Image (spheres, rainbow, N blue to C red):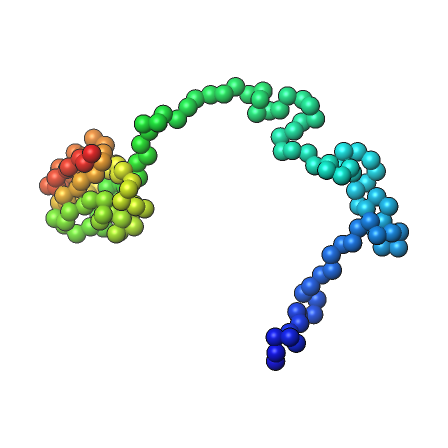
Length: 147
């Protein structure tokens, strides 16, 4: 078998529709575009959002809100997820990334108090909810907020 003798499998290649090639083709005359109208003309594409000259929806609706430049997105980790760590171990962003709980070390991490913690852990994160702090301290662990 040589490369110059290779052929596609039978029935796998379909011929394209040849439009506007006379009445015998079955796609002659209007070339599958119907009769007249904007869509039948050359260059007759209509931009997305165009409503025929009517004021478009995105211009009829009011502009609302803004995103503050100082906004910080936090990666959320719940206490029940911290149960995967061994007792008396240190939990920081690097260890959370290693466990697959946080995507990257560049993320700011917030620990939330969903679930219970039965182990003593040294947890350092960007932010803690009050309930998470209380539960970690009640389990005999320590809390350290990093900036």
